[in-house]
Amino acid sequence: MFRKTYDFVKKHKKKAFLAGAVYGGVYAYNNNDVVRIVVDGSCSWAWKKLSDFLPAARASNLEEPNQPHANHLRSGRSFGDSGGNCQPETPDGFVKDESVVATTLQLLEEALRLIDQLLNVDALRQKISQNPANKLELWEDMKILAWSRCFVAIYCVCHLVVYIKVQTGVASRLMYSQGAETTEKLHWKLGIISRHMQCTEYPIREGLGQLVKIVKNVVQKPVAPRQLQDALTLADIKQVVYEVRKLMEAGSSMNGFVHPRNYHLEFVVPAGQLDRSIEREPITQSPDDRILLAMTEDANRALESVDCNMVLNCCLEKCFTRLFSEVDSLLRDRTPPAAGSFAPNSQPFSATAKIPHVALLPALDRMSHIYASPLDAAPLVKDLVGLSYFAPFVASIVHQSLQRDSLACEESL
Image (cartoon, rainbow, N blue to C red; front, side):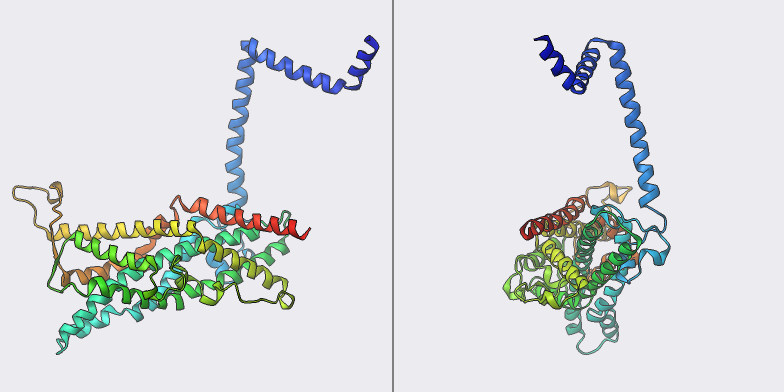
């Protein structure tokens, strides 16, 4: 019996020593105050050192001052061209928020030129100042243009922010698709991403033109019946916004939307790009073309998702809330202070304060610059990019893409 026990212990002596050490350590920790204090102090010291080391290591390796951003990729420049580090950032943040803001403002600068061309309020104002015979008709046109310009600016900036976030999320997935990286492979991937990011031309050209056309059509219904001499309250203005948003975001067939559920797709993605029934010939495509096609499909799936609609709606809510705040301030400035009040803002604001419709139109034109002018829109774009809803949304894009790749590999095996 003792022989068998000795042979068993000899055979499993390492496991026995380990079990004894673990049991002894647990027993000593539970029954000896000195041991407990030493262990707790050591763990606290180790965690403190680790928490101090990780941010410093990330800052030194992944956040160089010359870190390139999305507009480098869009313009075709690589990391090596700017002299920055070749290390990418984490998958859920291929570029930093500041870089997404810079890219969005760059695109807004180009979009503003087309908005000025298609919704030229200044040219119409100059015609009105010449007191022509059709002055009243020009004012009616001004009414539609001013409201349309404000709505187009809001939808444009929200579409661009969400679109750039989706594209950089897809780019993050490519950067982390494989483990070990060489400088050559990184430059190859960045070349692919620069080609992919060049598709941002559509939302500020054809897509924006389509947006202007549909918004002008939608604005007619709630705005045209309101006369120029009508006095509007804040509630009246909110009602106009509500009716326009209902028509725009419901994607009714009367507006000509091909995708009623995802109305924003008409303005950010070419119609042919969404048609998955089109047969592609992978044999005649190069490996780079196949990767670009996969990235485009990943981006389209993300833009068609319910999560994208939710994030876009959060951006729109923030922008329209800002619009209501600007109108509220305008009404406050036009409302005389209450009798006996030393500070106008100290009195509760009357919801019945009104502004003539004709006086609101120049204000709407000015407010549109808060959303479309790069200089004025910078704080708002920064707030939109920093919304907490974007982090899980972008992370899900990378996760779902990697999951599809894993399923594809299993099917091929």
